[in-house]
Amino acid sequence: MATSANQEHVASYYAATASSSSQRPALEGDVECEVCVVGAGFTGMSSALHLAEQGHDVIVLEAARVGYGASGRNGGQIVNSYSRDMDVIEARYGAETARVLGDMAFEGNRIIRSRIEQYRIECDLKEGNLFAACNTKQLHGLREHKALWERYGHRELELLEGEAYKREVVSERYVGALVDHSGGHLHPLNLVLGEAAAFEARGGRIHEQSPVLEVRHGEAVTLRTPRGSVRARRVVMAGNAYLQGVLPELESKSMPCGTQIITTEPLPEALRRELIPHDMAVEDCNYLLDYYRFTADGRLLYGGGVNYGGQDSADIASVIRPKMLKTFPQLADVRIDYAWSGNFLMTLNRLPQFGRLNDNVYYAQGYSGHGVTCAHLAGRLIAEVMRGEAGRFDAFAGLPHLPFPGGRLLRVPLSAMGAWYYAMRDRLGW
Image: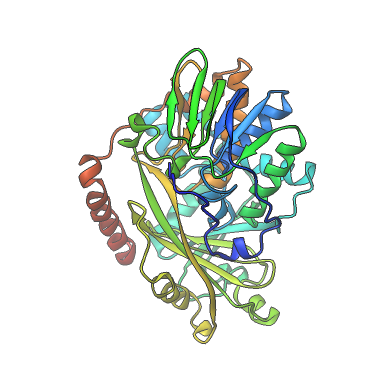
């Protein structure tokens, strides 16, 4: 976990339109609590809020600011399920594991919406998202995807074949789309800031600028920060890609990856309706996918690509703008107002890592690009396991996670080579 002092939010559209700029004090001195949560992103704040609602005394330690990492930098899309499709889960881990995970696949979405309603969080929630097929193979995959999810009871999917997809996104790049009417999109930083405020209203304590330097395990766990320590009966490690060096036993089984986003100047309403008539969020079906949506003030927010290892691009706009213009060439003269990147944590099997380091230290991480919804589910499952209901948590904890081939030295170039191969298949429609 990063240790430099006074880290502020990256200069993004989200930070510029954040609902709150208030800062929490760094931890000073030695304190005690029942549960300490490390990380104030979606996983950490979902866990902390669920635990506070159960009456637990909870402290959250954050190395920078609430929502500093992926939770405050992502595309803002409410995408159901996991980064690995259910048919793969069925084939690899069996029907019973698939059934349990399938039953939870849409729960994170429902948790987000209940939080927004219960705590009146203003985060620009809009309805609907869709998956756009760039070739006939991908369209066939969307047909199979729809049939598979209907088998799991999800009936809010609509397949748009041929020119019908232009009802929702007017671009020549696609051959069809699958609309998820239960999905949506929002301002992710304002969501996590709202959850932090709800947690504090229930008596929770958050210390920003308080990176964890050392974890001392025992019947009570001690977490040391630069200017203090927390002694807690139980601990939740929720730092994801920004927890490097704190959980070395897990680092070989996950890899930080960077994604980049640009945001245009506000666009006229007529132009917005010309491009995405019903204001849905869009992502394509490529291995290295593009994703985009309109913000509340009418900007096109466009992201894509992956930097394995989490390195930043030298010029983000020069990488992402051509992708945007390939989708919407009529935006050639539009100004780019914001460009930023952020890291998410990827696992080899693309499924989240839940588990225990020992009897009183839990972790949840590695959502592999599907963290908005799954991180909210993780918080509920951690609260369940702490009250003695471990079944659903253990369904994830029992998934096998293997190290990346090549170890820390070679995992980045080997992953990049694999991504190049799949990107070529996407281009050729294989």
